[in-house]
Every structure is written in structure tokens, then in C-alpha cells.
Length: 113
Image 1 (tube, one colour):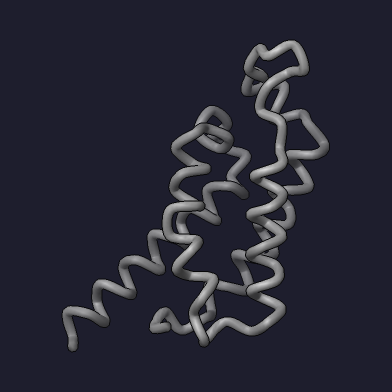
Image 2: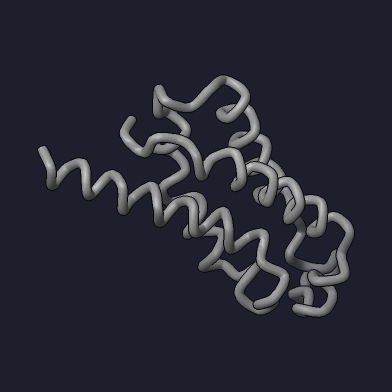
């Protein structure tokens, strides 16, 4: 039982780090990479089902997932946006700010589903 609890704690910590990474404007190239999106979505499907989350937290997690999923990492002509373009994009800034508030809320959630 202790091992399972430790695994869940590590799993949730990993998820929280992925949310926190979205908020990070100090490390531009990492913040909007494919890896970051995968790091968020990989545990997301499990975390969103946890009974310890409030309805509002579930709603906010779903909203963040939708925001990230809907973000255009490419220009209309198919070329990938540069780090500077994303860094200065007001749409990405809204995602970052929303993720920052959500992270502050989620970091207090008990990690056991």
C-alpha cells in the first residue's frame, strides 16, 4: 500500500510539473514543445477522473486541455511558429495565465484518487 501511495504521489507530482511548465515564461523553447503537450495530456486523462477534485477543478482542467489542444502552433501556411512568436502571442499568454491559476489551486489537492 505504501508503494502504491508513493507511486500516486510521484504521478501527481509529475502532472503538476507539466502544468507548471506551461506557466513558465523563463524557458521559452520548452514551454510550447510537443513534449510539454504530451507531458500534460499523458496523465491528464487519469487525473481528471480523481474523486478528490472538485467539479470546478475538473471543469478548469478540461478548459485548459481544450485551450492547449486548440492552440495553433503553426502559421496558416503550415510553418511552425518560432519561440519568439509564441512568447509574444496573446493567446498563449492567456493559456499560461490560466494554467498558473490552476496550478496554484491543484497543488493543494490530495494526490490519492
